[in-house]
Length: 115
Length: 113
Image (cartoon, rainbow over all chains, first blue to last red; front, side, top):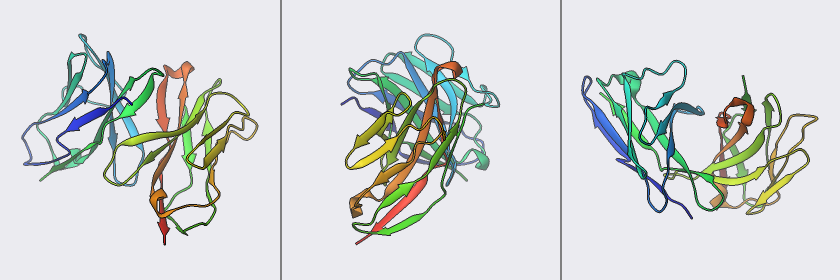
């Protein structure tokens, strides 16, 4: 089946630095990818919809200057957490529709810890 | 807006026990309903889905029936295994809301041998 891969799976950074998370569709092209954030013991919250070749669409309350999304190709979307703070520590998950059924496939997630 | 409510965990069971995870939803129109499973260290995977009222989704021994009258989509499995230990998420997708997925809070299930 279709595979979505994220990298890195875990990252620890100092407060004030920026961190980039990659999301790749390995065997299909994805014009649209979705970025979610999952707090401990809570549900996934949609942050933004990443559109290839155009600006991302952010959900209400998500700072677009804080969470930069770039969808430069049909198989890669990146999420950059800029000037990270401890409250940005979370599990970030991407997804994309793929395969013959257009099912939504999820990446393994990236755990960010900001010290 | 749309919302999904599912029972809080953790749910701890013995092998071969019966599992039920309750899920209810609030949405306008006629959403599609999903159960996703997240095994330790892995991403979410679609477990089953139902796209209209009275549809039953099934996979790997799990079943859930789309009940519009009670706005529910409870997940059941008759005999769980240790390998079923995971976090289960109920979700809906609503055309009226731009086809975005709305997730429940997740229910952690731990099956002991």
